[in-house]
Image (cartoon, rainbow, N blue to C red; front, side, top):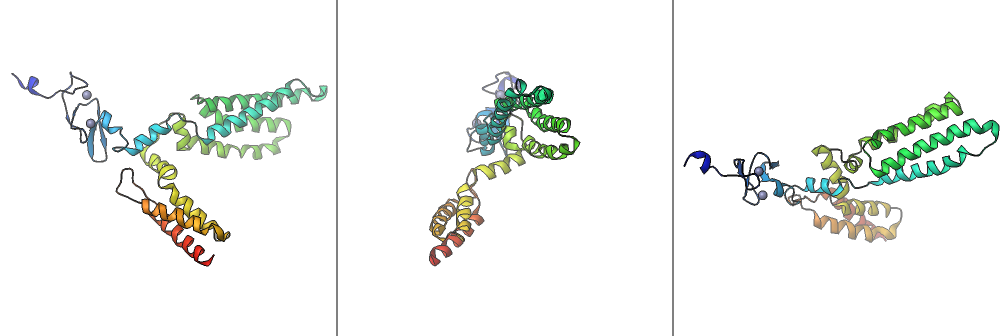
Length: 251
Ligand SMILES: [Zn+2]
Ligand SMILES: [Zn+2]
């Protein structure tokens, strides 16, 4: 028997030599199906488990899932289309040309908005085209002075284009550091943030103080930086508890 036959094989890819053992299930993995999470090596199946890689689990949860921006852009697109349609056929004769031009622009913006809502890959660039269409139409119909104001709508469009949550909807890869920030924003002990906000509002609206106190205290109890995924926002939970407690004493 030679060494080739003795070497362990990957159970999923029998033609591949096993490179190592998964840190979680103890199974062999090969070069085709191993993943590194933190400082440990895992097989493909284990690496995707939420208790091994919570960021990957988070990514998968939102992969292809519509975000708030998709709805805002989609619904505004629909409104543009609905308001643009009648302009194509109505209007006094002398206004017909500009009304039609405006109607066409509305329809174009509307179509782009609906494509964005549908998650068509090209519609991400289409979103950047929407402000340009509006700007060009404004410049033609109202005059060049109207262009700079319309161009301002390009700013939110660019912000949405780079928004990591919206990228997940369009299945565009998001780097791990950005994914980590997004996870923090959406899922890291959000109760602590809400509790602190309620406590801060209670400075003006005293009866809310006990609510802020309870929410922040519950969030504080949950804090566990060593858990997978970690539960953070200790500072916010403590601040919310202290402010809420002071408010409750005064009330
Ligand atoms: Zn495994
Ligand atoms: Zn393999």
